[in-house]
Length: 143
Image (cartoon, rainbow, N blue to C red; front, side, top):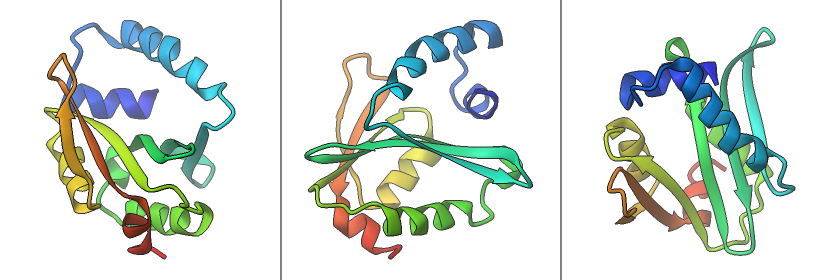
């Protein structure tokens, strides 16, 4: 949560404060982590968490749910290393890769476009966009 809060407070602050954001995050993320297909990769430096990636794979989709790195670890190649690892461990026999990005998170939107995902639609609240791409094509870049 600390990594996510620090990043999102800069990109898209909720205005609610850290304690309330943590409560809402735990309320929404805890049940998701209990679902069997959910996977969480924690990225650490000397045993200290510096990032994480949450995803799942179902019958049709590799869903990239959350990727966060602490600020000092952004832009130093960890993203590429993570996707190289994903290219090795995910047997993408599903056609699609999908993700959601906040409209104000221009960096995430640019990364998703760079990965070959296209914006499909805005969600009804118009703050979040849904992206989709070809799973094999995306992961082949890193295999």
